[in-house]
Length: 206
Image (cartoon, rainbow, N blue to C red):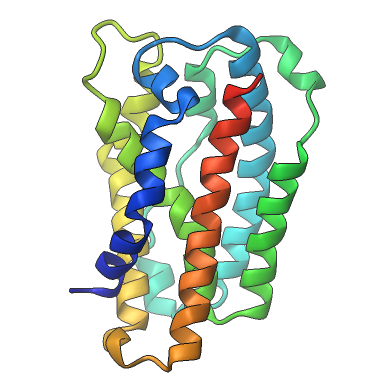
């Protein structure tokens, strides 16, 4: 079992909650209000802008080979467009849960090693890919099919797999990690997953 497989086992209960969260089900079953979509796109636009900066800080910690193997960057504005937000989204500021998530990632990246940095970002990357695959064929003529297709696409899958490969290469003998280091890695990773769930829950409450 590679390190990312072990991590996925630990995050499985949270991922199941994400699948069943009302907003994510709303994407899968074509059932979201305009207000929910406006709020989510506003939050995620701010988040992805900051994520891009945090990702750059993370890649600075990687080896030159890992950097060279990174797939081409993706334009997530295409996914945002698929949710058909209204101009009202421009009036919605970043919420506290969003800022807290970003602060968690920034702290993990700036204060930790390359693995800790990758694990702060990984739940976002992989969970969106899993959501796309999970709900891709749930509903015929789904309004939000382009969103699901984006995150289940070969290009996005390649980025997810690259992230896993980096984490695995950094920890080929992860079973032998010192207990405090392993605990820190797991805390960083699962905390990001909890924030992912919170992100969806707040969107559903609008």
